[in-house]
Length: 431
Image (tube, rainbow, N blue to C red):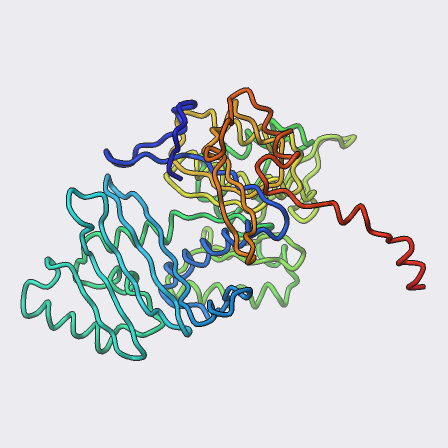
């Protein structure tokens, strides 16, 4: 998300620290199978591991190079936090965290250590910043983490963030990395009802945007009913028991699917356990508007609601919103309108990263050339990302849409062999 040598659209450049500038947008293009979704999945994997604090049982290695099987998978992110820059990362090898580190960077001297951890089997070596090990008690605490508490599959950043002893920026870094990344995949509507219920500002945002799109929806409503009116009686009884158990563990709200494709929020209101679901009021009925549940809506409307959460977070907070296949089930004109609206807004706080095939978005009127990225496979099948700003002679008046589809920037599928297919002949031979 670092800017290149581009002068246009200066409002797209954030300055999170005095020494650093970052961009608000990244659009990632590439043919099917180039690795766009794998990039998003890798980011999601890292965020999930940080939030859970425990290594997920996954062994996805690069299959096209046998030497990679024996090498660690490395994840690293640089980020700005409260006016300073940090780098955090970890290596995964043989289903264990083999190395993990957190440093402050962009300082006047060398990177400043916060912690660095090495694991070999059950043995840990933990190096902490000097200000964390000033006393004999601090040294005993370090030994306790090394010998007893830190397990091979456990991430140190979460362990230290939950400690009673104050490890300074570690807790703040953990909260940022585990909460600020928001991912939108093909269907990520879970939590939508809770967002609408808990934030009046988001509810108003969603209402105004949905109404402005002229999809026939006049308004949104959160319906609240006794659970037995929204679920079969036997299932409602089980869900009430499950909610009471969750209450005893400190939870006030749980989200469930009702079996028909609708999200159901279960909570206690005025002493009664109720279910809450989203209704869409459509105009056109002879005697007025009619309510539809979520499962009755089109794929396009569902996708819009997924994107509403993403855009709202990126507008109002310093979240990093990552969307895979932004244009899925969305009309190209509407997709371009949403991105351009976000791009032109001078009060946004977050960053929006998305993968797409939609060539209509390739427009330098509302995105910079260093905000377009292209993914191609190398000779060995590995994915390589290149920003458009690295290409020569990309003038402002260049027709990016036409240039991209004609293969000027690569990252488009090769279709020559499809034209040579004799599929009618092959079909006749089959039958």
